[in-house]
Length: 166
Image (cartoon, helix red, strand yellow):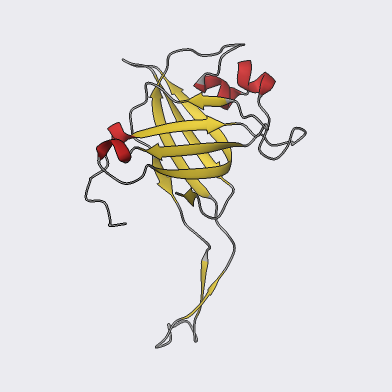
């Protein structure tokens, strides 16, 4: 397969969040700005200096794993709902999500984690496949901001070294 020459834009992507149940519950993020940003640091790199100086060939080793982090912004539409998934319930652990979603760490997990999938359309644009980044075991936090329009900014930490890229 040749490398795609089709530039991807925010109009090609979708963000979906799933719980950890056998048949997952799903929140498709709608009315969002298309500003997903992700940092994938990989493992930390330790450098060992010779009396405070780099050697001709640096002495490098991998250290601790580092979590993947990311964020995106959506328009605030519905603060909570007992029967439908809404974004605010994700960060407040209220409504349908707080009551019925299962952590990817298990039903009795202390920390509520979910899966975030960033899907990118490819076939409709002439590519041979669609693409995705899957971020496992995500903890979500957020900020609600009043304005015209009001927004909800979501930050997440994925406790996985790398996303699954397909």
